[in-house]
Image (tube, rainbow, N blue to C red; front, top):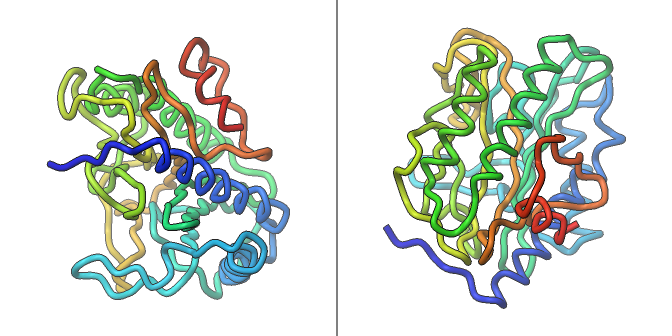
Length: 277
């Protein structure tokens, strides 16, 4: 497994791309409301990326081996869609939840992140699932430091999700990222402490747990991209892009509108993460 260690120049490029990726989510937030279509959200994000930021939407025409090219600029995953929902004619209505997954390319570097949005007033279940998933992401982030293991991240996420009565999607994971959209290592959101790749300063990867209110099994839709929960239960996902620093971590996908970390995020790690704000 070849994991790239980023140079100081790379890291500076990743900071810029990460902040810009997060700023797309800041920009689109006021538009995520009842009556809007997922296609309209895609159009607005696409125009903002290209015309305002001068960034390239990474998902557009992205085609890993075995996949048809992804046709849109962002992913919009509504209710029981776990990930890779394709924007289109779907009208968001009161009570829906949607994950918007944004990846921009700036000067060759990728900035990848996602957030959950509620359409109007969420159900108690949807709010709790989103909150627990957000906590899972941050519990994973808090494990990041040189000498720790990828298994430590997955274990922290899995323990918290399952303690809440939820399940962790196994088929999709976080990933290394840089000038390439998806590179090594794979960052599983389940696992055992002390296993897997040992973390080194200069690694950059995403932590993006997908947590289901019901069972973890998935089903793939006919478009070849959209993934739903098999039992039609709600699913939630949050994503940040993380740099392993000499002493902990730095969150690269922070901007003015980023939701604050949960109250339990304290100590050295969060001090580092704040640098990107």
